[in-house]
Length: 588
Image (cartoon, rainbow, N blue to C red; front, side, top):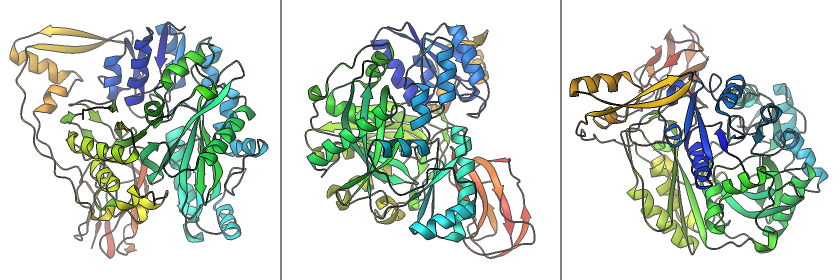
């Protein structure tokens, strides 16, 4: 068994892995960027080392720095979590070459399945058919047009080395092809370090159902159970549940067996998820995620298993703890992803900022996985997942009722969150009656009627005389408690990176200024980085025309004109960082 695991990730998944490792008697090492110096995943680990930088490319995607810390920490294993380097074969190989165990599949399996194109080929060889699509990288928008005219519109452009909806664009006509491909490639590059994309036919009303599989080094492979992840917006999941409702047992068995065949076809080891689209009682291979999934807790709650523990056991060379016939599933579990987004009007605009108040829900069979506490800051540079709230009950109806109760008890202030959207979806008759698809949230769920959230202020907490100050010694994070007079204590607190006490005394404000408002002063609704400016001074524009592309929380957002007229002034250029409410374009 391992002595020390370096967790090459951040947020709730880093906290999740650290907690299981601690229960197994294994020490953990956290890594952190400049912005995450006092993040929760750093505080729960036994040791922590600075990566430097703020953006993912400067920090969590810095292979050289991670390898350096791996040596300094004497860790004998590395867990990649999900996102970042979790599906990067070159990174996995670089870890293995140091003699440290990579807690995940072998690099060869990642190369086959982490690449969505080669995974389609492997699935076909295993006798598992996928949605009609390409098996080569698309390099020119004319290929998108040709595919659409051959297979019909709409067409999905998807990141070959990605997941979670990042780098995916739906193209509904040939006029959209060029901009969609450029945007998909940019977003894929920033999220996964690779820009390659491929094409796929976009089904009309499918459900997204995925199968959790596991394989060990002793030729054992099994499927644990399926999850329904159909409730999505921007192709990113909002609600996940296990088991999939109204899903025939014979289809479940066939899908599970198909998922195992796909895993065996590439010599897979450790945890993986084979994703399918399900429509008209047929399922189609979509892709394989060569890592632990964000939604793994719902599988854990219906099986009573700790999948992170299984990952660690398998990586250490042990056999799978159970056989296929010993896997038991009971009840119903639902997970919602609470994201830092404002869902008002159904827009889901990113809402980075400081969480001034966070009260987690409680009660029987209720679980919250998070990387944040009151006073922590959700940065524009990282994924916007704040917490995963998960419940279990004997039936699906009871699980829905429990989740509604739990979300109404959850208090998060200082940022906007998706909780109002979750409550709307969970209580919608079509969700109760399982009449949804991957397109339901954005077409029929009624989220356009959601009103903007109005955060409240938080009372100032009583000052303390003991102050924790952070320092770094040879790049290693250490904490020192200082006992100071009140004035000195406040000065020390303000000079450190710890913001929790100050944040509790701050006044909350809305993070979403209106876009334009018809005045001609076009402002941005969130802080972010300008990716592309689409207009020039003197150009005529119409209402609803895209003026620029703004990236926030690894998502690209089009800033639209709310007034027809002539561009009088463009105040930003590509690469500029802007704040909430900043004026970027003036139209008269």
